[in-house]
Structures are given as C-alpha cells and as structure tokens.
Image (cartoon, rainbow, N blue to C red; front, side, top):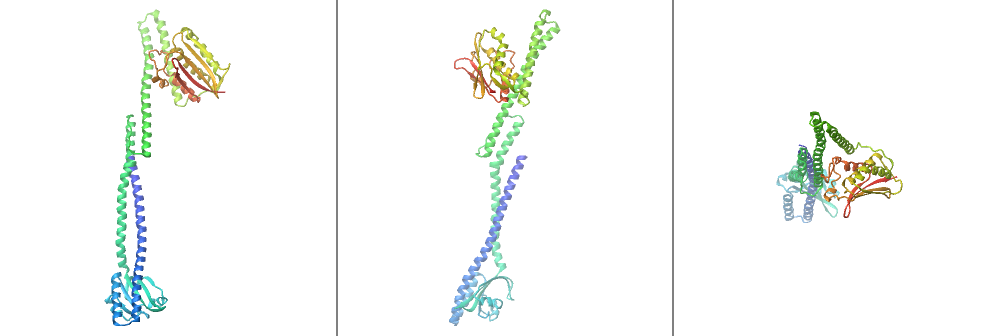
Length: 472
C-alpha cells in the first residue's frame, strides 16, 4: 500500500507539473500568436494599401474611364485577397471606390470625417470598434493616407470584422490547446511508465523482499537491472540482508550452543545427585561424585558469567576501571598461577619483559583475564615438554604483548573463526573447562580499550597471540 501510495503521489505530482508546464506554454503561445496574427494582418493590409495608394494617385494624374475602372477592379481584388471591405476616399473623406457592391449607397458620402485630420498629417491609423452607422459591430480598421509630394490626396481604408478574425484565431487556439492536451496525455503515460520502471517498480521489489525477510526468509535478495541510485539502494539492501542472514545464523548457532553447553553440566548434575538420592551410587563413592558435581556447577557458573559479560559488552553496558597498570607484573602473576600445570606438562616458559616495570592504561582485573585466557590456551595446546615464550616490548606509544607456544598450528580455515562465540577449533582436545567464550570476551575488552588483538601461525610450527595496550 505504501509503495502504491508513493507511485500514485509521484506520478500525480509529475503529471500536475507536466500539465502546468504544457498549459503555461500553450497560454504563452496563444498570446504570442494573437500578437503575431494582428501584426501580420497589419503588414498585409499596409502592403495592399500601398498598392492601392499608388494606383489611386496615378488615377488622379490620369483621370479617365479606364484608369478609374482599373482602380475599381484593383480595389475589388485587394478586398477579395485580404477577405475584408476596402474603401478609397478623396481628400475630403468622401468615398470614391469600394470593394463590395453592397456599400454602393455610401459613395460620395463623407465616410472618414472622424479620422480625416489625422490622415492629413500623413499618419496611418489602426484601431478597433464600430464605425459610424456603416459598421455597427466591432471591426479591425486600418487606414493609410494617399500622399503625393507631401499633399494629402485621399486614403485607403480596410475593414475586417473582429468576429471573423476571432474565428480564425479560435481555430489556431484549438490546435494549440489540443496539442497541449495530447502532449500532457502522452507525457503522463510516459511518466507513469518510466516512473514505474525506474523508481516505483524497483522499490516494489525491495519492499517485497523486505516483507519476506521480516517474515523470516532471510535468504531473500533483490536483483535489479539498472545503474542508478536505486541499484545502489538494492545493493545496500542485499548487504543488509547478508548481515541479517549472518546474524540469524549466529543467533541460531548461539542458541544451539548455549543449549548444549547448559544441558551438558545440568544433565551431569542431575544424574549424579539423582544417583546419590536413589542409592545407586555407593556411599564410599558419594564424595567423588559430589566433587564432580561441584566442578560441573563451577563450569555452569563460568558459562553464565561469561554469557553475562559478553551480553553486557555487546549491549554497551560493560564498564572498565581504567588506571595505570604494570603489565609486566600481571604477566609474572599469571605465570605463577599456572606453575602447577606448567610443571605437570614439563613445559619450558621463557619470559622476556622490557624493563622491570612497564605501565599501561587498562583495567587490572580485565588485563589479568586477558593474559590468563591466552596463557591458558598456550598451556592447553602445547605438547608435553614444549616451549612457551611471553614477551613485552614498546612500539611508539603502545606496548606489544606476545604469547607464543610451539604446539600445533591453527588451520587456516579456523583462524578467522576463533573469535566467534562457542567456536572450538579442536573439539576433541578442548577440555570441559572451556566455554568457547574466552577469546570473544578478551577481544571485546581490548576493543573497548581501543586496542587490537590478533593471532599468527609460525613459519614451520607454533602459534603466537599478539595484543596491544596504550603505554603510559
């Protein structure tokens, strides 16, 4: 409905504009043609009047029957040519010759008395209106004086009914306005067609796809065969749809993973406690199974805490207490914390720290969490008797921390996924202590600090995690 409304509004506005322009053009063209028509008529009348003036002056100089007859014939011919009534008067304003026999009765009458003085000045006259008792309707009147050597000898007068001229103009006006309407209709159709094809049609496709996506069909896409801003909109829409599909996929995987991670410890807890209550587990084994249950509860607690931390980070509600922290001291504390596990696997740990103290800006507890998590992965995946190297060094205004282990390399297809929630590159070797949320959490922490973290495989063996911190 919204798309159709947009289509209707867009086409309606375009049509209104088109008709306004078309009718305005027709109106201006009509005004121009009206002016052009009367100017042309005046030129035509003036040209024919000149011919009659010459013939009249010549007749006055050679006054005989033949010359008078020729003047009369020429007057009739001019009247027929210009489709008007033509009169020739003498210098007193009396009619001597007329083009229409019905005006024979006004011969030798003082016909031009109202205008004779102006004509004697040698000026042509153009006016509109009735004329004495001869023409009671409005006429277009043109008079030209007949001058010979500066002397006024008479005049030629041409009379055309205004109604006749308006009838001729009306035919032209009807043609102009008909063309304006036809142009408006043709333009409206073309406007509708191209608006639908170029604008509203593609928008309808995008709207339909958006409706499908809103109903859960996140794989729906829009493919347009155009090269304009709407195509860019479609590409942006498809990009958004890709993101939504990825988000939906992540959401489903997240729910699946959370369900699995929660179900596993809950099932164990329920089974062991149920066995104890039912007496299936011997009393001398109860403490053993209770200890396992306690570990599962701790695992469940870690998972819930990690989920809450990650949710707070993604919601922007996770706050850090930024202070000056000695990163070298944190590394020493973390290595000491892992001493038991290091000795159990007979690992060699090489700690190379720049200076005795190296201060950075950060949240102490969260920095401990970052180093602990990465070091935990290093200890977990390195082979027995393997090597771990931890180092810090200054780069400009940053401190670069690297933690290397010479264990198996991370497959290339896993490198880009290790930052995803619940992702475990080697599920068979991942202990129950891992929730699969450690790396996403530490990346979020470093992102809030405005720092980076990345991982690289060695040239032949081993894996190194790098992260930066702001140096004090």
